[in-house]
Image 1 (cartoon, rainbow, N blue to C red):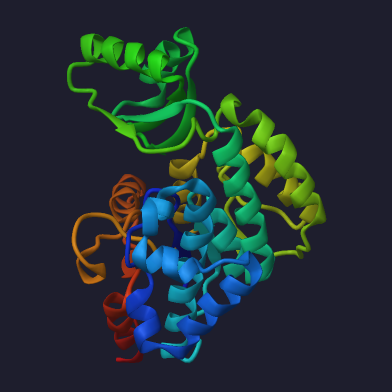
Image 2: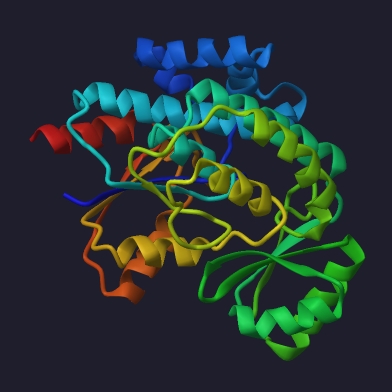
Length: 321
C-alpha cells in the first residue's frame, strides 16, 4: 500500500482536544506528560480546559496541536501494532512539523521546542489578519497585491487565503464582492497575516532555532509547504524550507496533487477537529480539501480520519479486520 499521513494546521484546535485519548490510553497520557516536560507548563490543562481562551493564542495553539497530532498517531500505531507503514507524510503549516516527526526526521521533543518558539514569535511579531476567498489564485492575486495584501495559502484551486492589514483586507473584500459576487470571503481568527511578508521578522528570528535543531534525513518522503513538492535528503535544505514556509504561501493543493500523482492508495488524517460539539462530533479539518483534490486527480485513494478516540478505534478496527 502507498500510504500518506496528513496533519492539519492552526484553526483545527478546540477545547477538550485530547481528553478522550488520555482517558483511554496510557500512551497518549505519556505524550502529554512529555510535552509538559518540554514546554515547562501544562499543555494538557490548556488543551482540555482552555482557561482564559489561552488555547487560541498562537504560542499555545501550535504546541497543543502538535501534541494532539502525535498522541493520535501513537495511539493508532499502538492499536494496530504498528502494522500500517506510511510511504509519505504531509502537514498544513504547523502540521508539516508533525509530518517530519512521523517521518523520523526529528523527535517529538525537537519539533515541540521548534513550534513553541515558532508560535511565540508569530504571536509576538505578527501583524495583520487573514481572509479566505473562494476564488482561484489568478483571480484574487492581482487584486490582493494592488491593495498591499499577499497570498498566504493556496488550499484548493478555488480557495485562496490572503493576508494583510485589517483595513487593506476590508477594502479587498469589498472589491471582491463587486467583481466576483460568488467569491465568498471568510475572515479568519488569527494573530497575524501568517505566511506573508508580515512574518519576515518572526521568520528571521526563528531561523536561529532551526539552525540549532537536531534533524536527520526523513525515513519516508515528506512534502514541503514552501515548494509544493517533496523535501530532499539535504537536512540543511529542509531547515531553509521551513524558514521560508513561515513567510511564503502554503502550497497545500500542490502538496496533495504531488502525493496523489505518486499513486497514493490510502490517506490517514491525524489530530485536530472542526465544528461544534464534543470530540466525537468534530469533523476532520482536511477531509474536504483532500476529497476535492482526489476528484481533480482522478484518484481512488481511500480516506480515513484518526482524529479522536472513536475514529482511531474505527480506523484500527478496519486495519485488523
